[in-house]
Length: 393
Ligand SMILES: *Cc1c(COP(=O)(O)O)cnc(C)c1O
Image (cartoon, rainbow, N blue to C red; front, side):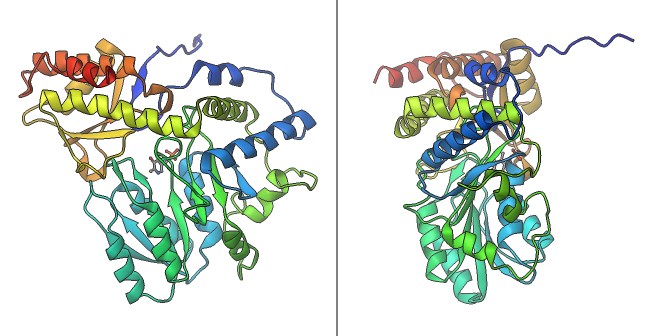
């Protein structure tokens, strides 16, 4: 048996993540591996922390990437901030809020769920009502950008309500970081996590996190040990920590970190505000094309994420057949529905490096062609021109 090297084709990734990775990031990852305590590597880690602080808009010292994907960033926040018996309010409006509940319960906490319709933002009034009814709540958690539905919630308002009731906040920013306005310090978010494979356009497998001084206080004064050895920030800080000498905790994913460093350098070159504006502008162009065809958004205007466009699949159209044709004929990946939305929606991502004019025009032309051939109830021949009109200003 002679298994050969694996050579994947060049796809265009316009799903819910991973998104297209910049060639500069892939190039950075192919550079020579250093030791994880090499002074040059430690220097790069310090730069990375500065770049992440910029991306998160924070001065938090405890800002770094966890060596595992977004779900591990989520788990890091919960295992460090939730002790057995702690009551945690989780606002759920999609798949990822359900994962938060799992985390609370596995930490021995008591999860109080505040449910909103999938496809809508979290309702601040419902959070306030739940806090009034549960004055012993310690932590409030919610997803800023629900990738499963394409809805964005008002993080600033939700955090302010949580603080009024003396709670710490855990915010999922896996899809929002660098794609939508997000200001950790100004909004006083206590614990936040993200992922590298969405709007950061890096490869999957790392999870940037940031913790406020308030959160750190709670972690340092825990009555019980953090249940996870790997994610215990008291230990992780020994490697990623400030001025003190770095000690071995685990072997950092050196080359993956080169990739994240490069993607953050690219962000710095573009400018954070410009990145937010680009995601917004490109969403408007894609939207014009999709709506010209007669396709309908799941999320009402004003609550839509620019980087994740969820559409209702038209009546009688075979979900998987369309996505397969896009993949096989156009090398274009879009996302299927998740959870209760499986088979009902498509999710078109415009994240990071993939959020550009060429991709939007290609995606619209490809959908126009394929939906036409599938005899879907859409208007053909108008989508590309509608998007071009937006690009022309
Ligand atoms: C993708 C995603 C996650 C999980 O990230 P992984 O890297 O897949 O573990 C969590 N929350 C949201 C909102 C996401 O979009």
